[in-house]
Length: 349
Ligand code: FES
Ligand SMILES: [Fe+2]
Image (cartoon, rainbow, N blue to C red; front, side, top):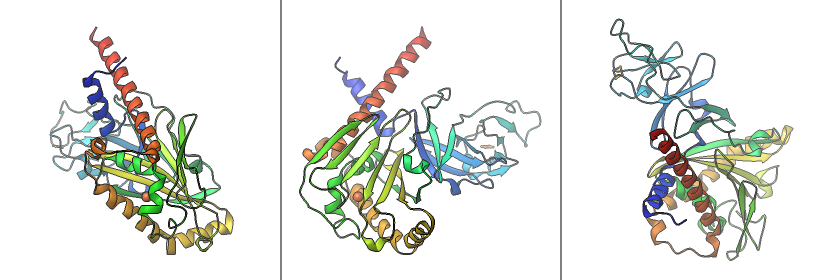
């Protein structure tokens, strides 16, 4: 059935703000502490995170139930968060524990804020961004490299002033490697002309260059299971970059605001024992700065593109990856909106 113009525009809005019912990384593990709160914006919503006394991470709306001050400006007291403005104390479930300024205040004991499911993996903190608090989260989709102890790596994050879809499109576009990054340490090689191929697999797809493999950013795989989306790709390494073969990048992107996203890239290699130590040392001392240079080239290019580039673009064969990715996002958004509408209709009857 053809979609109504209204539904098309709702799908576009939903994709732009970020598909719901996905797990998204929001911070590095080390950033979430027991002695101070951490504020972050995810899918347009302000969240605050902190560690309880047991080390578990709490995540609730960053909004004081009294008058709306950001709880992330507050302090942690006995595992709960205290608002800086008038001292109201809220726990990790979003329930008001204490109103110290007012004896027997009826706010005490009220669940006033939404709380979110949180998991930690691979040095990152993931939050389940569902449309409704009642939604039970599916398993957190994790890249195999993050679960396999033979792989080791470093998580780097950066905030880019661009809609997250540009960051995903960039990852689905291997042909930019040999142009945008032509003067880099790792991506200066291979042919500048090729065709791309797209192969579907269960819960995902692979985009690869037809004419070469192992020379440049020649392939990327997107995984799109229920509950999230991520990708992995290889960056060929010259022998001077130490043991472990190609560098694997595992990428997730957090939509923050219409023109802001946070990229999470794990830079990984499959190395054990002393080779692992040697690669980690080499990375810290020599390679990390070079990788940041490459990432900066991506950031500057994407931030320079207009917000409505998608409406004026002329795609060609090399854009099959991002076209496929966009369809997957549209489908996820449409399924969600239809499910929400159906649930709304049942509730209204
Ligand atoms: S706004 Fe937070 S205690 Fe008043
Ligand atoms: Fe790039």
